[in-house]
Image (cartoon, rainbow, N blue to C red; front, side, top):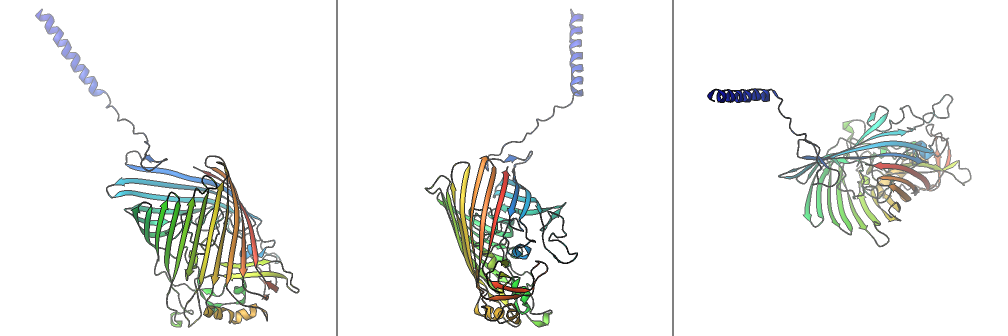
Length: 510
């Protein structure tokens, strides 16, 4: 028995030893794969980045559109070959665009750290300039740049646009974001059309350093230092350089900016409630000029601060239907024109049309809206503007809605600036005897848009806009002609002008 017992114990020990050796030779069991998890802290669409406590959301849209009766996909026929309204003007311009945005958020002991990036990749057909058109062997109205490369950021025949790129932390916003001056709907109280006057815009964001305080119950306030150079300079015009050709082209001299000195200072207070919102905003804008002449010894005018104030009101879920809304805003500026005539709207007009006046070849309307005007040896004269815009949107059913919208802006020159312009020899050459000189003008706009959303996040829209230039000149202009727009030297009646545009768009959001 002892012998049998010893053999059994020895065999068991051997099996255990062999089993241990085999186990040691086996690979270590891999850790479980960490699959992407839904992050419910910040709303739908967020996921945890694997291996981190940061949540990320990807979004964007793809858009295809055609703008009829314009040389631009965002504005009217206000100047250049567009304003000429002849064979050099486009009947349509087309664009395709992909937008991509990346939103990340991380909870920390100091609050949420957020980054946001939004970029667009666009292909725009038609960059039209017109150079020597009509001359023997001359070029066509199509410019030398490849299709789709109009604007900055040309990439492989298309254009890259960086709209937003900012960090938010502990109440601070640092980077390229919508201006704190702008209403939440920026340039779009109910429209797709980009060129509405009547308020601040920067739909593609402006570099800024902002602090926002949240007082609870929907009340917030912000103070911001934002870059003025990219979007908020309408022009400081040295009227000593005024020419007759420039006047009729919508310019009363030459731009004379010095280097950037001060960012714009912007303040905002807003109340958000279930019924809508109310916002007050204000901005201070420094106008810094170079020199009167070609060198330092010619001297320069003193810097002059401009300012702007704006009120915005939104009323939601009004009795006319579920989801119906009214958006309104009004603005006043003094030496800070771009807070009214926003950066996608035009501050220079040179438009041609028909005339019934005997002896006149056609009619012309021209205008300019800078920040300030001055002459050599003089001080800057601020241009004052006022304006408003708004829209009413009605939802017919879950698939169809219509908005009617409008805008208006008035531009007023001081007595001294009118003397600079109207008393110049260039103006005397541009206007015939008996004509009236007054650079003040108004812009009126009215539009109608209808949208159809047959399935979620796919929308088709048609947006019709009328723009009216109400210029204050009267009489006849003696135009020397312009080869770039194929306009001959002739007499032109001074007359108000109109532009009609239709924007057709298909957009898929994701």
